[in-house]
Length: 151
Image 1 (cartoon, helix red, strand yellow):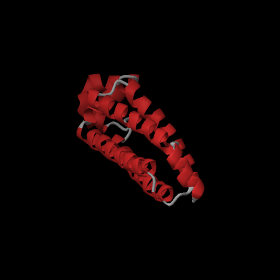
Image 2 (image 1 turned 90 degrees about the vertical axis):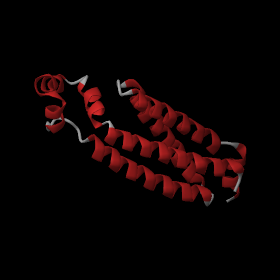
Image 3 (image 1 turned 180 degrees about the horizontal axis):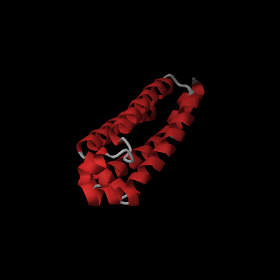
């Protein structure tokens, strides 16, 4: 296995770790996430001003951020494991799907940069974005292309 494929697999592992950190932060800073979400929602602002964060947290209009983050993380991990296995085995199509997944990751990470989330989420989003870009670069290096063509 060429170095770029091994590096791509390590980058995938780093993406999983960063995603896990994001889920953990979503759980630990749940109130801050709700407050950031409420900034653009007049109904949420009304509940927040009248009943505080506890009333907003218990409101049915607030998305269930922690379960959503956890389910998304599980789906992401399964995708990474399956696609990483196919990449390591030399399947050309896995590189295409991982490139598309990285593109989607850039889109998601850019949302984390632009929505008034706490600083730690901005840092995690920026790191995730950079790792997605790095994944695309290593997936399309010459030694990766030669390896995937030969298999």
